[in-house]
Amino acid sequence: MDIDRSKGINDSYGHIILDNVIKFIASLMCQFAFPYHHVARYGGEELAIIMPDTTLEEAREICENIRAAMEKSHLRRKANNEVLGIVTISIGVARLQCGENVENFIIRADKSLYQAKENGRNRVVC
Image (tube, rainbow, N blue to C red; front, side):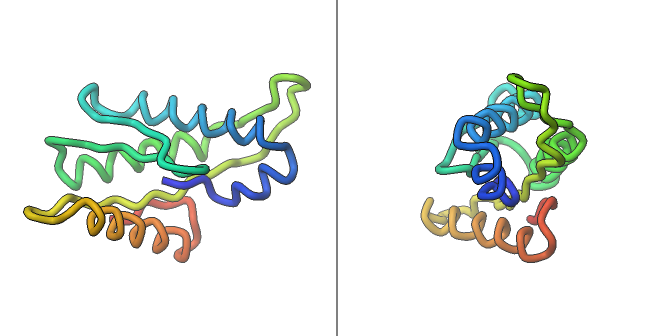
């Protein structure tokens, strides 16, 4: 998953606020993921959940719950209570295919993520 328009957040509020947004998203991921899932920061403002023993539909539902919770959140700066506005995320979901290498799996997940971005952001694509 990836923060939509993260450059705007960074440019308007700085790296520390963007990092706090990432931490908030990670907390949502932990809230909705199953205990045996693995939540991780994958790079920059990208995050991932590895979901063993989870169907594609369950994974899509978890991601949709995270996306919806993020969209409903009204984030504010702690220092002065300034509203950051609505921050959304786009999510690409892929299922590891039997015999598939990790590189191809990540490429397919990225393609789903890019499709979510191209189709208007703030959505989950499998």
